[in-house]
Image 1 (cartoon, rainbow over the protein chains, first blue to last red):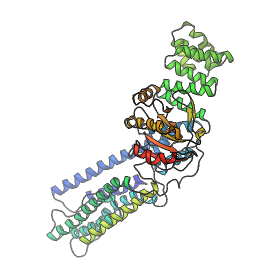
Image 2: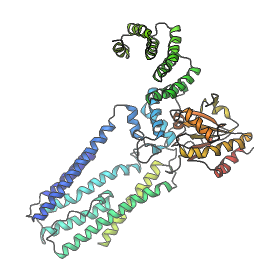
Image 3: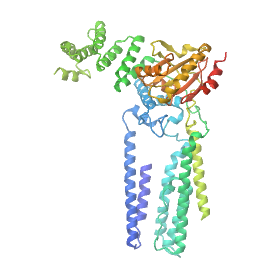
Image 4: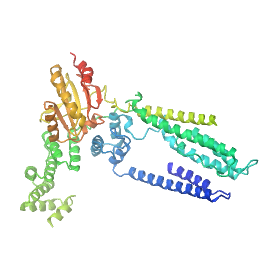
Length: 367
Length: 177
């Protein structure tokens, strides 16, 4: 909704600013032109901003998309996806881990809401009073579009009694009141475009000055209000809605080993091979599975402990002599250790698993 | 004209109040301190091997009061807090207190150095390399401390370092026989 409305409002404003039928002095024309230019620049900047935020939201990775929807609990105004705080990193890992176990975005969201409360969601709920937050931008845009629209309507009508400029000034004042009443953010606009400025009588000047003061008063109120809320919020005693809005969900995945495997992978991705190896060793004690042995072997190869990696691969091959992954690890471990007998297991690996994701790389290594 | 300005002001204030109410209701919690979603509920699971290699499970601690402290070697306030926790462990262990440190997103070497430097080597420390335990407990950062009573329920939670006064006020009553 926002881009289209913004566009309509801006176009109306530009129309009101640029297409005056009256002959204007050179200075006034230049001022109008500058205003129009500034508006166009602002519009372009807004469009660029919208495009950028739309682009990040449409990220293909569901974990990343969910992280972007969540507020980092340790930061101010940053999403879990963007924050560099350790707790946000931990939350990203937790999200990734749960997705890897096949949980739905709703389940993961519920898991985090249960732990961090509904404020972890960056978007306020679009119901009840939360609807007001959603409506505020629309109201602001509407209010921004009303003054130029009213002015344009007045201008188009032949005005009986009094000059057109007078009528337009009155329209500007009315619109200013309506705007200031209706919404807050329109107050960010400076004094409304005053038709006939520069050629106004003292009466007109008085009225324009008053309407300008209303704008400034509203803008000042808005700033004080926003600042006040921002400063006072941490001290507000409200605890309404604590935990009440969340539905009970199953806490963990119920499989600590699977959890830890996911964490180890995350460590690997961060290049923290020692930490990953530690987790794999821990997991191996509880669940001595070949898959874990091979993951540990791969981590050890990357952290340079090739001898231990080779032993692990050999252990797996002792039980399953034709396990392609074990052959791959054995070959890679030997190769990393600069051994000549690395080729044999790698060639066997290629024969046994020509479609393996690692096969092209192994072919490249073997030349 | 002053009438219009007043009207405008009232309008802005009214909308602002409505929005403030929304913020308070919709997003709950008192911003600065930790949320309370875990307090009063059974403690989330906490199990694994300690830094010393011994198995630990919070579920097996029923009958004891457990102070769970999330910390890390990269966190300054945690360094100041550790001696206090070690002292609490020494002082109250015979009254059923067990202090458990959860070392969040840290390396075992760094935390061993930290424990040695702060004279807290006797603390039970569970490594949490990816911070999964921290997320499971709904932690917002480190340090953060939870008190788990003898029935396994979280009764207190504090974000930021605890003080000797807080321990006397909140922890000591739980230890009363």
